[in-house]
Image (cartoon, rainbow, N blue to C red; front, side):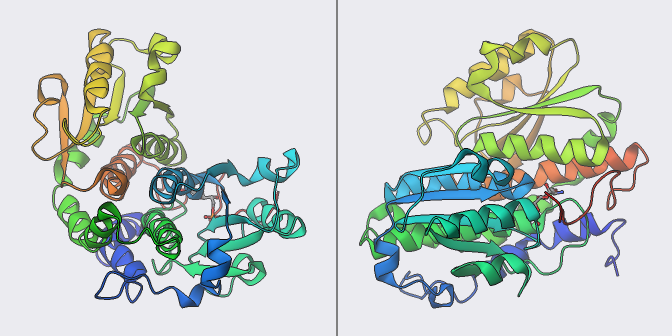
Length: 369
Ligand code: M6R
């Protein structure tokens, strides 16, 4: 049933190219138009939206953080992202022209469900991104965009996360399309590049043996830090969450620019620091800054593990371990850069002798507030 893998989590990691492909399937026409009629929101309703909230928990919250970068950039509509357990208790400003996107793999998370109900009471439109057909969250939402990741058994979300990120891109692109931004060069390129993602994820998966070996060598770490900027920041948060929940090792994700404002003080001789490098020089203004951050932590004794695009030579002198990912447009990079972090957490947990699929204290769906 685990398809020859030791854990469901490994099986689900391996299924990610399919999860991404299936989530795109039938939703992009040959002309690059988005076909999302299933979503049940008219073009006019989508055009009326002047503000977006993304509300979710855990890994689904990290997908929301990535959505913000993409949706704001493509549409210029302001996007706020919030954990569901905080959302309704601070009386957020919502009205008919607000779109609240709730993201949930299970569709049963109580915090997210309560946030959704609050949004509906305030007359906002609610769109669910969900992996389980007919579950409570999509049933109570005005609109739904299903992720087609297939059943996810392991408690740790993997393939559903990649599918959620893809669904968020589709939401951004449909909002751009109804506003007539679709022919803007960048959006047209993104539509083409989205179709290449399943292949890119498959390519990353062929290079995971050195990552597993690296994981085995990190199993005794007392703390592991993750750094990223821009869309690499939510990926860093996700890498740290996976490690905490599976390996029970203290881990934190930071925006790399925040390092000098405090966290750098915890770095000690041998502290593993995983860095998600942005697109190389020339394609991201942030690349040079992240290279400096890698130098800074290394100068304080950190063992640096750098995830960088193929061909990015600037990071090479400062990486104790280098993990390569294929070239993608910056905003799409989380779909590939997340994968090694999943494998790393899984391997560290397995080396420590833990049950990867059923970590202590956790349940697959959290149905209490
Ligand atoms: O089913 P949901 O997406 O609503 O679940 C949200 C979180 O509980 C979930 O992502 C949790 O953080 C996972 N264990 C992460 O691996």
